Length: 94
Image (cartoon, rainbow, N blue to C red):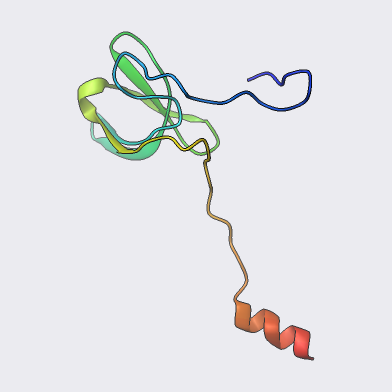
């Protein structure tokens, strides 16, 4: 996705596809014996592309094997390891 001249990205995933999903929707998909959770990153006439939080494609699945978990909010948050608050408090007190 290209940046605009002012340096801000355009809105990602506003239009609903022919299958009822939009880019950025969180879905549960299965492909063969694999089942995975990911975000819709595109579609073709018969398939939906599902990707991880870094937009690396996990697979292309038929529409019948993709289930919507949560509609796109425009944000994708990955887990971040955080320190325990109690341990931070103890280091500040010393």
